[in-house]
Length: 279
Image (cartoon, rainbow, N blue to C red; front, side):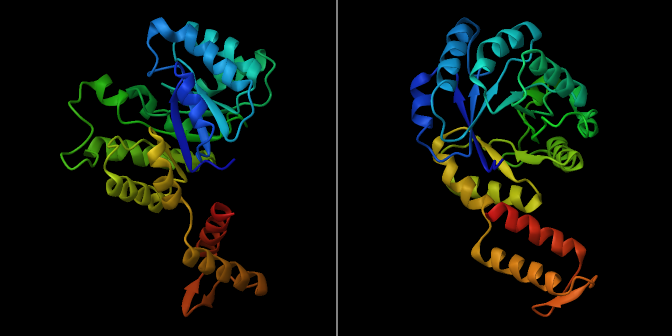
């Protein structure tokens, strides 16, 4: 399941969903939550269900509403269309994921994966270490810096230059490590400045540098930069191939020289990760 770019599409905008089908995003997230007003929820559910019945060119997730009654209505409407996954907002640890997995089981679904937004409430921060070994449906973890500041009365999550303030740098790091501890993809949160192309590229490159494997997008124009950032370069691929080949040729070696530098097990692991992301 390749997830470099995951593009949000409002569930009450069938015109945008239709356009999104022709885009290059690895995954679409059809949103029934924040981008849809209460009065339009039913129309959005129908539009999403209709879209799920058509041929797909990318993975399709549906972001459901976190309130139990609304979530039940969301799932009842969209699950017959067999979405590839459900994005779970306001997740509070493995228990939230397990509860959703049971709902999906009860709807006779054995297919959909689960992608939680793992940092939207204060309680969620203290449950980030509980996602491992909960369900095979878990396919990644992502985080957000919008709902949490609102929940605690913070004025903003960002400095004047757009970087995260200290509390949200910590939250980002915890979400990153929580994903890797659970053995699933770590997905970076959105970059909100639509016209800042260089800022987007710098942000996405930092995310990949730090260990994220993909990123949420809020506009189609962001997809190309995200893909460029999360796709290994030719030089990286060549280095990774040399490292893997060297260890394949010396299977009993714990460490060896490649290109004049000492390499050991962590370098081999990184090389394999680069090749997995490239192909």
